[in-house]
Length: 153
Picture 1 (cartoon, rainbow, N blue to C red):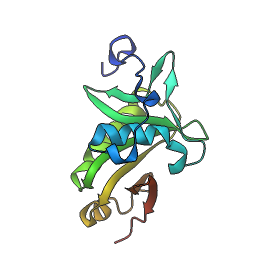
Picture 2: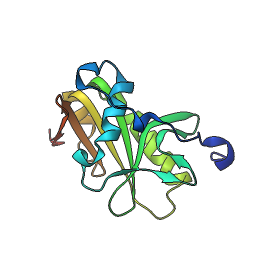
Picture 3: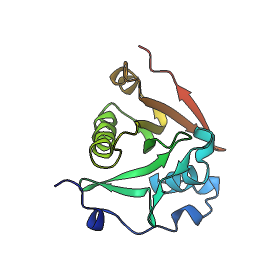
């Protein structure tokens, strides 16, 4: 059995309540905090997954942890993988594993999409994502802004 609701969830975190000064963005945890405070900059009405007192911060998925699990305006799942620096092609395997775990264990008939956010999206990641219609890539800048990258060779 891949999914055990009693043991596979962690308690809600206070991370989303912490304010991060943009000058203090030093690692992936700081990036996660900042993204959590600004999900609607990525997509209007995007919100953190919350159900039965469980939230989508470091959401457990098959022995690993999704950086952020969110819900879109249509109440579909959005798996967000963060990379503090460059996002290389190997991150797509990680995202697909998480996305499919959510699809197989939690989503039922809902759509599951994936987003990768990094300081720099490398060409090899752009190439690896070509043709994947349910994956989006974003680069971030400070002050916090997201720039969607078109997945085109």
